[in-house]
Length: 101
Image (tube, rainbow, N blue to C red; front, side):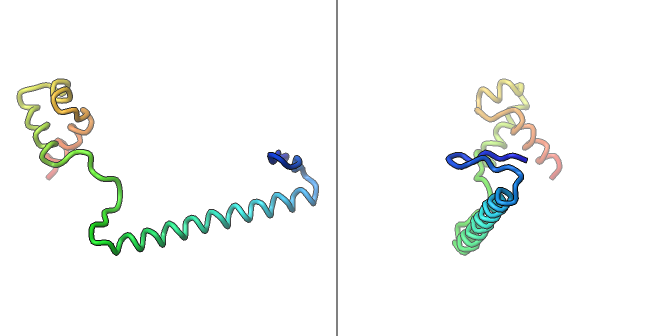
């Protein structure tokens, strides 16, 4: 194994080099654990806020999607995409969800 650390020497397979690599790896793992811990703490605090919603916010409202599905009765998918600006896959997904309900 051979690792080249910028602004340092090349770390090869000697005992001293393996020690340096192990210490640097330990610090990297430690930093990652700290990031995860801080993220979880921040999420816990955010959940206490009454308007907290986890995940990505919706791009289109239910009314917009319902309108697009209704337009499919008289128009093709391509025409509905041009009219609404909503992608074909999003319209098809919403239509499928409506029929499953």
